[in-house]
Image (cartoon, rainbow, N blue to C red; front, side):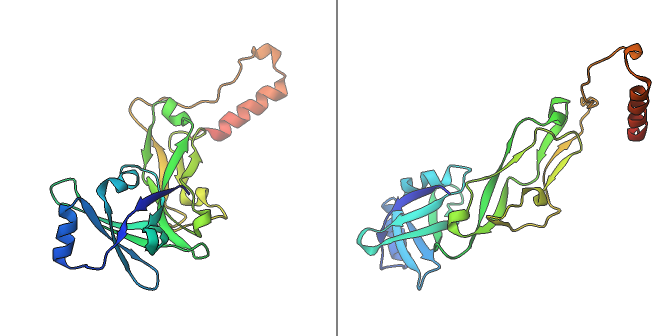
Length: 215
């Protein structure tokens, strides 16, 4: 998984007065949990733009200079109720040999046949919670939807791999192609052959197939 770096400074004072002073100076109060003890630090608000304004998932390298570097994931962001202002950020420290859980975006490739025929692509889940050691965390989960017809669905069970565990039930629908008023029947394209050029047995087989698939 891709990583971004946030540079900051460790802080000793954590009271309301010190926190307000940091915000007035354009700094964001932050905490790293998950280690032996919480680590309080601050960083410039602009340092968070690549973490916040993106749909992608990232690991975070927190650089506190002489106080050390820490690998982490964003845990919680607190925003001003009116202004677009980041008030506080919580991070969770991660280690190479310990599994971690985080949300990973879901992406589709190709164009569904059902959509080409007028159906509507509906995304029920745009992110999935995934558990793995940091080295196996994916940037995103990809699924090919090219062969999906109207009424077809992609379930969590269709996306499982050995490298990471998806923390959702197998029967959860991730994506589906719904019918619409403008949809047309989805038929397999076949080359038309004059009936007198087709052997009788082949015509009979084709008729049997069509009869068996009529609903």
